[in-house]
Length: 116
Image (cartoon, rainbow, N blue to C red; front, top):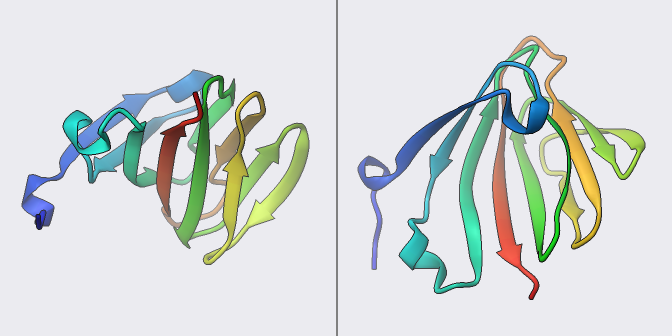
């Protein structure tokens, strides 16, 4: 199977998880592509001044692979800065948040896979 960018869906999520602004999500997978093993695989775009609020993952884990920009990342209450090439993993039962305090878009690949 080959999927072309024209088949990817675009979501715009305002105030995602209590965060600020609108987050753009380019979905690589549709529900059937996961085979019951996850719910998100795509590119998230956080515009300057926007964020995804703090949230806990239960029964799943989420990974971010930073492509462009710089992220301020809350890793279970510990603030850290992520740069292109960095990977974060929020495991089942943990929490995280992410924001873009920079002047350019923050782009990263996001993957949410089920753990149970």
